[in-house]
Image 1 (cartoon, rainbow, N blue to C red):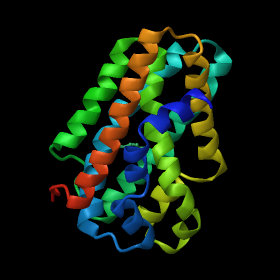
Image 2: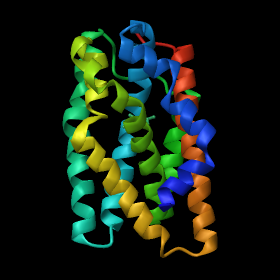
Image 3: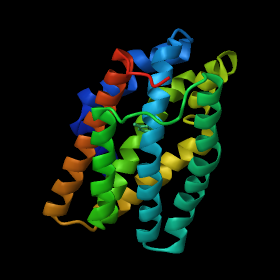
Length: 217
Ligand SMILES: Cc1ncc(CN)c(N)n1
């Protein structure tokens, strides 16, 4: 079993809850209320900045150019199509893009910040792998549904499914699998703790999104 499969198996219950969530099920069948999607977009947009900084830092810590290039390309995707997806969606839903950060958003921002400041590639990857792999897992079964949905729902599925995104997740997992082999027991325990915490926070973020974040109008 690969290291990342092993890490996922340790948090199977939270992983399943985060990837088969009522929020994403409703998003994919088009029944998600505009207000719930609005709250999600306003909060998740605040996740993006810390994510970009973390991914940029991981790129800087990659052991070689070949290890860095797919991460740098993914950075372009986040700063391009994903960023404009948020801005177009919030404009279409007539929402300001700024809103006070909810506790679930702050918790994620803190974890990303901590991972970036650790200066440790494997800790950065632990958060990045979870954030993207969970999205690939929930979105992939809905890939064919995207076209019939309003773009602010459908494009969120498209951005997190398909061959290109599958390769992004394979790259991030490959980097963590490779790093894991070089780690001692203490470092592996740190990775395991960070990975589990990230999965818990992903689940909590969807729970809060489904309960409904306060929407800034
Ligand atoms: C909280 C969270 N986690 C992950 C992703 C995937 N890009 C996201 N947009 N937001």
